Amino acid sequence: MSVTKQTPYLRFLNLLDALDRMNPGKKPDEIEKGLLDKIVTYAHAQKLILVGNLISMSQLGSQATLHGRLKNLVAMGYIQMVENIDGRKKEVLPTKLAIKRYEEISRCLEKAVKAA
Image (cartoon, rainbow, N blue to C red):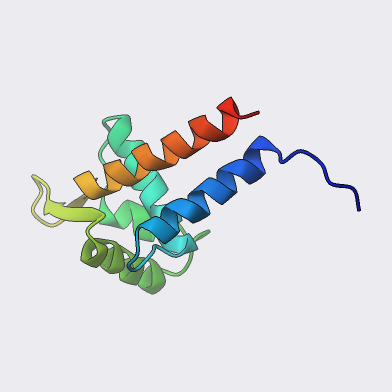
């Protein structure tokens, strides 16, 4: 097997791994990352996303699984659930910690691309 130059994507994955090692504590699992990606994307687009919208994402898991993962994200400090005007529904918003995580991921991506 020949040694080749590391691709930007592999460099990015290595930077993410280093980032996770520098920030000890409970890490979001793949389902939680998928939910957080959706929440942050909606927030960035200034769109409303409700708990019901998220737990209906069957491609990520069952409603019970997704509801549990949302609770985990609240416990980790990545999201908050706020009652909306209706009162029966809860909006899901990213916290400053979540925004900081995505800024760090963006920096890793920029470093990986610049080194290419």
